[in-house]
Image: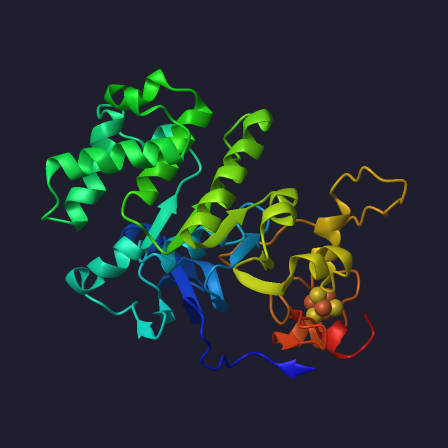
Length: 344
Ligand code: SF4
């Protein structure tokens, strides 16, 4: 067993170290004022969305990031891509630190790192044809490309994602949900990225279409050598497509493991509870683990292990001491005193 709190340099394509993202939602001065023991005091309210997150994604890897709604996974995605500035911590693309770059310095990395959003209708401009939507990032990142080359590229990528290039003159509302998500994927692929963050890419789609879109993402990964960070609340999605999985709870990573290892031998009590809730088509009965209480608010994080109020194995140490992410002999990383003490 070894401690993974301080990350060493790895050959990761993308590495985040001790990433913190807090949002100040205090509002105006009047909203911040309160009376305490007869005195007027000023109080700030902070949502602690990400708390000391460290991870590294290897080239061509598909890292699934899972957790319930509000666990910070989408904030992680947006912070990694520079859409939110981190409150503290570091982000590296290969060996280059990118979280402190100016907008101009960040441009080449914006081309390498693309995002696919959950709702393809909301992420496509309803007033732009597919051709314009797909050409836009190409002209932005490659000022010298000719209109004919851009047009050819649109046709090539539309073909790759399974949308007839003859429909390039159509608008988003003329397509089905699945086709719109194919167009969103095409837009991300237009600039030949290396790293794609897919934030719940199939959760807005009909179940019958989800497998097609996941297959499309997997094909694109294989053909183009892409690296993915796949954000989802759906464990069955990561079980089928991810090579490794990070489980998040209240803005922290509580467990990270190879997919097979995580699904066969989950170690963190929260991961065990999440997995026990998946219906299984097998004769083997798994007991549904019912957690105590509700997810605490990210405004007032619990002391010690942030899961202690809901965990079935809490002891005194759990209430007072934050567990560090430790590496087990199996390669799994887990943040739990119970596992470290050998009682779980
Ligand atoms: Fe439960 Fe303690 Fe482990 Fe947290 S550290 S998951 S409270 S056993």
